[in-house]
Length: 255
Image (cartoon, rainbow, N blue to C red; front, side, top):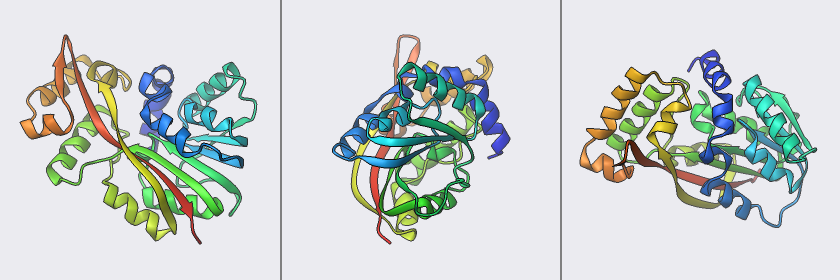
């Protein structure tokens, strides 16, 4: 993925993401809050913060939160949201996920929700997380994932790329686990859920043209039965409802 393309897409559509119900709150954020219940952190980092909804959530259990994103308009949305919610302990930093300008062994908590599939070098990102986390620091990953089945994997990633050129890959859970293990991040808790989506709002967030929207829509309508079943695709009124599988993982730095 061209990083400038991602910045253009998210910069041009920052307000749409700030008002997107599935980004404001969904099951994945509820699960994160349950996983972190009872914890208190000195320094926390939210990577790929977008409009800052996860950063705001963890600000309630952290003394300091850094909200990180490569896109300036998204960080402006984070500032607005943090002001409106009186989250005075949030600061923003602009950087890509693979290059985090934070010293080694200084962060207690890292969260990343619905952003990892945009990272072109996910392995390098996880390495950075391991580098900056303190011993026994916590990494939370919450992201759409791809089924282990190759056919379903290819269909999901191709349709996501057609809708959003900044998409890199919805990774299989097996792929994510291999990378986590490589950098001594042990998964101590995980939960699978679904991200429920409406086709019209889904394509609307990335500014898809009307003609190309129709092209993508036909792929949903004409999908094979096993694809429709796997992704819960169904037509309703003048829209299409569907869902992607999502994994929420709580990992601890073990070395």
